[in-house]
Amino acid sequence: MKTLLAVLAGLFFVLAISILPVSAKEPGDTLVKSIEQALSILRADDALAVKKARIRETVDDLFDFELMAQKVTGHHWYNFSPEEKKEFTALFADLVGDIYLDKLKFYRNEKIEFIGQYHRSEHDGRSYYLVCTMITKIEQQFRVNYGMYVFSGQSRVYDVEIEGVSLIRSFRAQYANLLEKMTPAKFIENVRARLKERRGL
Image (cartoon, rainbow, N blue to C red):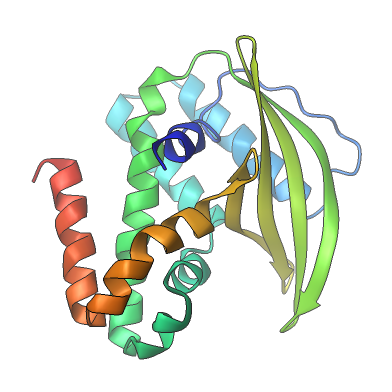
């Protein structure tokens, strides 16, 4: 899990980028544009806190945290009240956002290469794609695949896989035991407490 999160934290915040333009259409070009936007923010002379806030906006625009929250809780999602769903989605977004932002200051000359995108399926009016990239850091390379969908002309990310390890599956495995033992309210309390502990509050 730590390996996944450490690599995940570097996906957005790269200081040098090489993108292959072939087939870079929706949703691939949405991913490319988001990375380019993050690069622009990183290269600005703003204070770190300002950069973090602006990049968090970029992350929020790209990721569908509600769908991700549903996927990491699995069938237990249907036991959540509408308010609990909203509350957990916000907490999960904060958790993933914090993972990215905490690592922001450590990035040096990573490169991301756009490999291609592949149509997976159609469901509920959404077109699902696998968008493939390669991250190069010094002499190491990581294959990073994004699960994305297109709906009403908008592309969003709902999962990230690093070398075959899925963010969604990893969190779902982490939460499964808690969700079996706890009510949604208690589970949310647990996640909130862990987030506060992580933030040193």
